[in-house]
Length: 295
Length: 228
Image 1 (cartoon, rainbow over the protein chains, first blue to last red):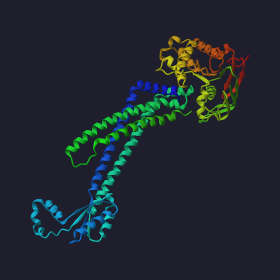
Image 2 (image 1 turned 180 degrees about the horizontal axis):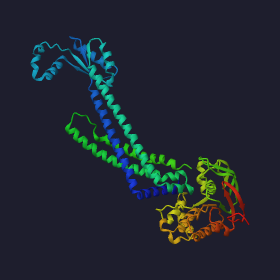
Image 3 (image 1 turned 90 degrees about the vertical axis):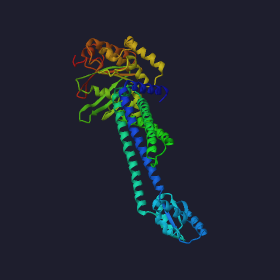
Image 4 (image 1 turned 180 degrees about the vertical axis):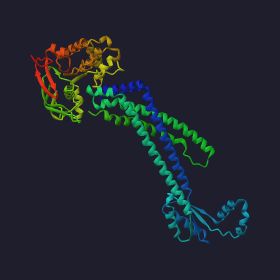
């Protein structure tokens, strides 16, 4: 398509948007609503994923050292554990520190510890973080066999439950995004089909007087791009405002919920929305036109 | 310019629109296609601009073999012809000027050319003072003249008309036929399917009669009806 063709297409696209104000409004708001929900679901999904990740990373192994091991051997032990595959971080907890922790946990009832305080039967131990957390069992099996390790402990059933829960959350999020995405595409392609149908007379005449297929597509493609783009801008602005507001509310009322901060997340989402809007508009009109271009 | 070799057309619903039609229209000829409704005249015209493809036979138009034409060449084929219909097929939300200019714009004619040629052709059909009107504001005859202007603005070597005066009164029809004759005089090959007996009889042009999909008569200076 040459310059004349492009200027024709642009002019026709703008003309069509102006003449079919209602239809253009419907198409734009359809894109806006669909993309808004799509973005909302995506944000929900990435946040659920983020929360799942946060909870998973709190899972750790506790490695008890054989009683009476001296400090030098403990240092060597720490280095050995650190070398095991998938071990992310090893923290040493001395028997004194362990007792102190227990004292804190018991709080008001620390009298119960009275009997053991003098002898302190608690062993020295390590807290081992594993990355990825799913490898915790493998790491446990290796560490168990290291000489000087008395016992390795982790809450098997809690870990299993947590992992299956986070996997379900992720799967659910992905499914939701797919369902919303295909729904948006379906509604869009139908809306554009109506727009194309309402202009079949123009298409017929264009074909009759010898317009090439690419020239016939031109105005629709540009119209689709413009409508899709405008719709996605609306969606982006709305989701930006909503998420920023929600983030403020949640962080002040439920501070333990680890939400992703609005920046740079929202900028990425907005970019993706604009691209998606233009793509849906352009692709939707091209696909819808194909039927009418058959000779 | 237009040649049919043993062309048959069988529609998917088993209706046989044309059967074994051979026809040759030379450059610069003026041809009337006559015959009862449903005899196959419209199908024949549609085949010339490749709206319909034959089920059998070959068609040559302006140097193209339509049996073998590539999809992307169809627009180029159609730039060689202007087509006029009974129902005008104008865009009601565009002015007379825009309707005619549309045909030039979609084949990417430079803007200045578009204006000059559109005005010139509107002069020819006598609608210069109507350029800013919309089709619903015009009479049937005026609308058909706009449609004709659109068909010929590109100076095509072939002009096809399918019942161009089917919706018009006899007096207005005469004006349209006079314009078609003018176009023919300027060098275009013209093929007109029509029921306008009086016009056909008066103009004494070549007449091709079609009945039940077959050419039954082909006379160089013929009349609408058979006979002496």
